[in-house]
Every structure is written in structure tokens, then in C-alpha cells.
Image (cartoon, rainbow, N blue to C red):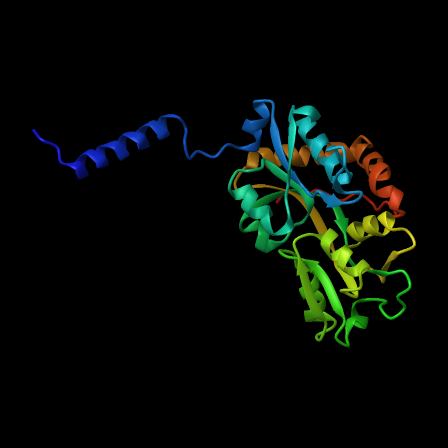
Length: 277
């Protein structure tokens, strides 16, 4: 019997699908499965001094890095077997959903909207939104003082700048960049008047440029930092929550904070209570 070309193509596609299925193609691997194989890919920021920073020699440092490594250790993975992957704010959910990272520790605020796409362990830290300005600036003292067409910078994929516009200064001009470090450079060269995000992030930049930049005003939001992971990966989420609680209980949390963020002068807060939702 002669088989025409379309049927042959169809048979070939079906055969490839069977092979892919047999090889596990399309199946999502949980973070716990990755850990059981001895390796993890963890998302962090690369440009946040004191939190998540890629150093000139290629190493990584910061409080988020310390948390990421502690959690990995509790999952059975040594630091040398962690591959860190840069996770800009606008890409975090996509990186998790595509399986490009096992979990993300990157000043990742827990919100209801994000919980529709990914799950969170934690919180492992609670921060608050504030403002970064030049040290000689006397006009900007808080979000209410940003009226009058002042230029405010934050990053794409985060909500702080829009929150200021909606709740405090309706005529503020918003500028967005891919990273906070780009916002800070815009502030330093006078392209914007202020940068807004969480106070702990801003404190790191102020410490990086002593005498040039300062954090002003009292925090005006509450930002609960969580560890993002795949939606429905309840097993790993429970393990990470256990790890966060252990890190707080054994003193490693406070020690990591003091060795990283502490250098900026940001006071150590009370550790948070894990929310096992």
C-alpha cells in the first residue's frame, strides 16, 4: 500500500511526540527534584549593593544571596552547586513559569496579583518604600513633596513609582528603567529628581555613594519579601519555609544581615513570621 506524503508526515510527528513523552519532555521539574540531583538554579538581582550584587570577580554577595545559599543548604545543595541567574523585576514570574530558575530570592514582594502566577515562601524580610535623592537636595522630604512635575524613577515591572503617583503626587513625572542601578545613575547625573523603591535597597545605594546620595522620609508602605517558586510546588514551599524559620532561629539570619546590609547603617529589624498560606 502506498502512503502519501501527508500521512507520512503525520506519522513522523506522532512518533516524535511519543519519544518526547517517553523522555519526559514537557514535564516540569520541581525545585525539590533539582535539589535531589545536587544542583539548583536560583534567581537573584545582580545590581543591588548589600542585597544581590555580582562583584567584578564574578562572585556574588548580599543578604538575598546569603538567604538563597542557606535555603539551598537545607535542601541539600552546597554553594558551589548553585547557579545564580539574573532576575530583573519584570522577568521574575516568567523565569519561574518557564522553569529557568528553581526559586528566586530578589527583593520579591509578595502580592496577591503575583500569587496568581507563582507561589511564595516566607516572608524572610519586611521592608518599606522610601525615596533616594542627592545629598544636597532639600526640597524632597517624602512622597507628598514630589508634586510640581518632579521626575521620579523606578524599574519596569515594579509598582512603587505608580503608587506614589496614585496616592501622593498626581503630577509627578514617572521614569522607568530595567534596573535600579540605571535609575541611580539617572539621579546622579540629574536626569531625575528621586528614585523610589524599598528603603533597604535604597540604603545600599546610599552606602555605595557616601556623601552623594541619601534616603529621605519615613517608609510609607510595607513590602514583604518572599522566595518565589513554581505555582503548586507545595513540597518545596514547605521546605523553604522550614529553612527560613531555621535561619532565624539559629542566628544565621541576623548574622547574614549584619554582614551585608548592616554596613549601610540600615538598622536590623525584627525578623518576620513565616506565612504558611
